[in-house]
Image (cartoon, rainbow, N blue to C red):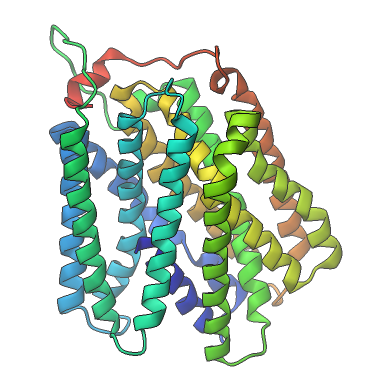
Length: 404
């Protein structure tokens, strides 16, 4: 349902594009990034206080209550409360997704022979949930008010929390070593950031986010030139994202685990940036809305399928005591800050510029970011491949994450 909300947000944005300038679209995403650091730090503080498992349940239950309150008390319009709520949902769900994916790492060990298929199944379930949510929202839209969809989201999120409880009971937590002597907890994220491997993941995630923003922006810009009515545009994008989810689901379920088994984890992580680099000459040469849609479809489909399940496995190399902190830093802070900075630079570069200008500059920026993405992923090969170096796992991490 978070994916459904994201799709609806995009459709809402597309409905405004008849009168919106490029610089308004570029500014989209700057404000949520400002809230990512305090939100991730708050989740980390919760993990330090309660442990990863209890924090996962508390955060999910609290968001379910927030959605319930929004369904009951929310009012249509651009009031400050609704604007804050609109920003809060993607920021919080980014952290919730990180905590939920960490549960897979608690269940499946790094050396498990079923690692690739298990993570691929989890990724397929995530895509299927987004697809079912999108279909349900579209089917109920004529009869159910937006507050009704929020109410359904709150109920489903509560069901997800119940599934986490049952999973926690079935699978016991990883045993932490017994530490002696006083332990002083380091400030938020300093322990994770001190590891070279985590900094490498942070750089890769930032470049991934930048490429995603540049591709989406050019896709939105091409869609703004669509001459159909608002209803036609909404239907067009709804169908596009349903098709995107179906393609990602098929790739995730049938291709991803076999592909990773054949070429390895590092090569799997190179598929998405390699596909972007390969498509860019065609996008520049044809410069059509169709090619922008193909690039967006490729980026979105591969990111949700092959790349996501492979990316989640990179965290298994980090010791369990520091894994939560590293994941919140990379996915909860690094990705959002990179998106916000990219959006801000787009905004500054397009203010006062003629509408539709700067396409070549965006293309070359995307090309440079994609090549850097490929280079850093290759650099991580010595750690990601069997027999590679294991990142440092400071023992003091365990003292402040008791059940990790």
